[in-house]
Image 1 (cartoon, helix red, strand yellow):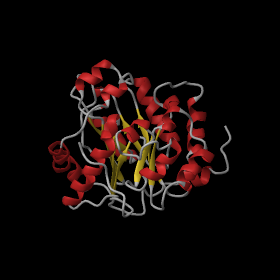
Image 2 (cartoon, helix red, strand yellow):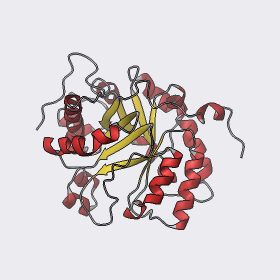
Image 3 (tube, rainbow, N blue to C red):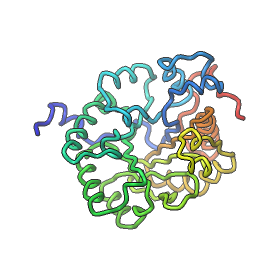
Length: 300
């Protein structure tokens, strides 16, 4: 298979951010109509206006759209034009490479994905590629070989891997991720059997990655995504994460990414803004409010 002419550029390793040591804190996605209803965005805000408003309060976001459909360079370039200098993106790997894998198509899909992210890669705005695998992706010989081949195809990009199944929580996996400088995603979620544990192992010196799902075990059991995400973190829970995990992780990597996925009722941005305030108390630098006159919504 021939490679596009942009391969030599897109396959070069790139720094996560110009601000070494700075933490990116944000949310998984930003375009939710209910966030306007909950007061995070002004009433009647249109989806096309949300990213620019979001970027007034945060310096980083995790793109959800790249999981649902293959990213297109022209669409990604439009996103870049909506945010200020220094704003960073992580992008979920498309579902055809993590959830709906086709043996005869995935290599071409990996290359198409890389080309779709070209505007982020070329401008230094790509914080990470998030490869999030479902619980059905257990640690089998077939899955181990596939993951190794996929990481080979993504070489040169800042990759973070999130496992859904507990079978991947073994030393050999952590050692291989470390060898490849691939970040293991640390996940906070409900304590349910079979889920990957909340390990805080730092496997890349370049960055660490943390994702907060919320701890609504009852909601998770329903299988309904809205119910699963309906959880607001208490301040003591956020402080516990900082004191027992984030401080340690920050000492082992140049920078880090922290994402809230509890999007129901705009709980994710509220929790993210509060975490940023707490991180500042602990002496960790993150993207605080970028413009005067724009304040976070009241916490409730």
